[in-house]
Structure formats: C-alpha cells, structure tokens
Amino acid sequence: MSKYTEVKRVTTHVMKAMKQDGEKISMLTAYDYSMAKIVDDAGIDIILVGDSASNVMAGHETTLPITLDQMIYHASSVVRAVKRAFVVVDLPFGSYQGDPKAALRAAIRIMKESGAHGVKLEGGEEISDSVKRILSAGIPVMGHLGLTPQSIYKFGTYVVRAKEEEEAKQLIKDAALLEKLGCFGVVLEKIPAKLATEVASNVSIPIIGIGAGGGVDGQVLVVHDLLGITKEFQPRFLRRYLDLYEDMKGAFQNYIKDVKSKDFPNEKEQY
Ligand code: KIV
Image (tube, rainbow, N blue to C red):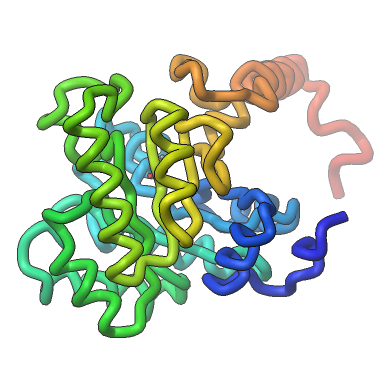
C-alpha cells in the first residue's frame, strides 16, 4: 500500500510530492453530492468539477453554455461530500478569457460560494494575465492544454491535437509558462503520448493526462464515461469499468415490470 493512501487531505504539496516519488495521481470528474461521496470514499486524489457537466449533466453538445452559477451549484454539491480529495473546478467559458479582473472575480466566487480548493482554466500564453491575477489572490490554478473543449469551434473537431511540430512546440512552451506562473498542475487532453511524456519530464508540476498516454504523472476521466453511462462516447483512450447504461436500464425495466404486475410493493414493503 502506498504511503499516500494514508494522506487525510490531498493538497497541492501532496500532489507535487507524488510526482517526485513517481506515485501516479488519480483524478475523476464529479458534479453532484452522491457521486462525489463514492468517488472520494474510493480514494481518488483529485475531483474535477468539470464543465463537462454541460454535456453529461445538462445534455448540451458542447461545454460552452454552462454558466458560472451552474458551476458553483455543482461544485458546492461536490464539496459537501468530499473529505480527502482536492476539489478543482473549471472556470466556465467566457468567465476568464477577457478581462483578468473578471477572471479573478469568477474564481473568487467559486472559492467562496462552493468551498472548492482550486480552479482550472483552458489555454496557455493567451490567458496568462488571468492566470497571474487569480494566482495573486492565493487561489491554486490548474492549466489545461491540448484539446481544450471550450475552443471547439476554433478547432472544428475533437481530433488529436499537437501532432504538427509548430503546435507541439507551442504546447511545450505553454506548459513551461504555466509552471513558471505558479500553476500547481496541468491537464493535457488528447495529444500524442510521446509529446505528453516530454512535457511531464520538462516540468516539476504534475501533468495529468486524458488521452495523453501513460508517461504523464496521472490520469483523469469523466466519471460517466468510466461507468459506461455515456454509451455513445467511445474514444480510443477510454477504459470503461462498468456498463452502467445497460445495468441501469435493466433495473428500471425490472421496476416498471414489478409496478405493472403489482409485485411491488409486497407485504414487507409497506406499513
Ligand atoms: O470538463 C472536464 O471534464 C475536463 C476533463 C475532460 C479534463 O476538463
């Protein structure tokens, strides 16, 4: 058993030590109290209240529509459940790309109103003023490079990013910049494994990958994908641990059958 299992509270310092010790960091999304409680109890290191809530919770096609108020609602539900994990929350699209002061106000609202431990922003050099401003208030910041879903209309598709040399070089530069600014970690999404490994070895902060191979410091998945609830989403990088869509559907069908046949409730299930 790893010494990190004993850690009562995962902090940015713990994560840095994990990287130094070669202990892989586990990260999953959660958006509500009940799911966060199970994920935390299982011993996850970081819970991400991702703006993927826009897709998996609200049914939007992209992450763009989710609002700051909605992110705070999800984050505060998660924080109420969590005892050990570090809780990081996505700043939603439009809340940090313009004015750094507005970015700071959004980050402060998340920290104050949800009780989360840090925020995550998508982008590198282009959002560095916002990152600096938020960090200056003592708020831990996580970066997110590679495929950044808030820019989906710029990319046009969800294909692997940074395959070309120029984009790969920019990504390496951005990761180094985020480290220099003081970010506690960076998520790398859907980039070649070789490039991700290079980034992870270039910086001292933890690099958490999703579709970025095994050479990084940790892994993150969307919890609904891991559980097999989002049945249609089947990227190569995803490992499903359950087929909950079918299991849940089966349970609902059994319930419907029992209600219709008057089998439920029985004698013991009433007062
Ligand atoms: O919003 C999210 O779930 C994310 C992960 C895919 C890293 O940003």
